Length: 367
Ligand code: NAD
Ligand code: IPM
Ligand code: MN
Image (cartoon, rainbow, N blue to C red; front, side, top):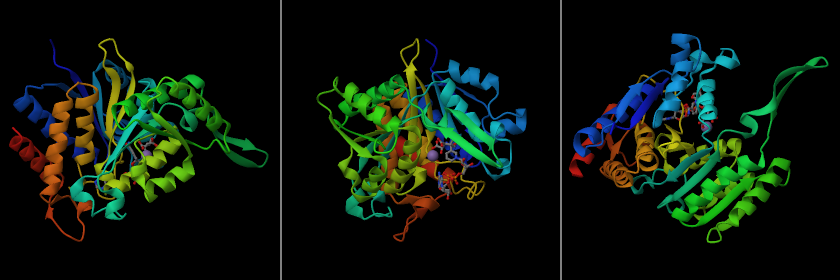
């Protein structure tokens, strides 16, 4: 049997820097655990624009559709800020999500013990936190029509449309209920049914889907209150399901519960392929961090944890994913810190590559 295939798209800014550390981890699993992958690499975002004049070449799109999983670093940066909207780096990522039909975006927020003191929130609010945000990723206001900037009388109007079909809501709700069944059996759905028709439909469909999951305790919250509750007492949540835009905001907010945006991984999953694996793209929640790019300061943990999610959700290697997560716990417990994790209590300062090396060492020690 051939090895499972991985397409790596490092992208822009700190993307290639953190991805280089993931390559070390992939190599380790190949050499030490007999888990070899056929790894190929390609361009996305500004890097693809520089080479091809488009943020995602059609050949790259075709490769992404053909592999078992895609791993992406980050896209974007000030160099590309003034490009035409249609060729901006972010369009490359959005095309991947849409054409791979990755409707269910899993964004876990876990507070590692060693970082509980480091969050901007009080320790008892975040210690032991383990929640999962399920963000709808291929519809809503990100993709709804009509959209554009139009002339209206003597001024322009910017238009985006929030739009959800019942089936789009039902499939992401189902994936969230399935996850809740494997976790703490609690699901909170967030929308704004008080002001948006799409929110009313969202709530109705989630309730309907929930009839197949009587064991899951379902609750509903307006998304603005949800944002407040996330920082007030996040441990009230187990799984949260929400739409594309609210999920974008709420997951950045949840990032701070873990101490740093540099800690938050994600998995974007679609329907199963012929081989039974879900179509999947794994990426950190953070962006290309232009303010620290090229300075060896980026924290690679979010990207490495995204690979752990690939091991779990694409390759049925839950035990090896747990091994990798435990190695990261160990490194943090040892006080190893990239700049974003350096609190008043200090620690052992490392560069991006120093963090990757420390995790490889901890993996070696796990054998
Ligand atoms: P950002 O996530 O790039 O950075 C926000 C802040 O967090 C910055 O101060 C940055 O230094 C810090 N940070 C982020 N990741 C870090 C890491 N791994 N280690 C240490 N610090 C880290 O968000 P932004 O500044 O709003 O956006 C910059 C660019 O990235 C924009 O072009 C945006 O569109 C793009 N972006 C891309 C993605 C993606 O590729 N998935 C996600 C978000 C933003
Ligand atoms: C994210 C990012 C993206 C989004 C951008 C870069 C398209 O913020 O993955 O959270 O808005 O979805
Ligand atoms: Mn975002």
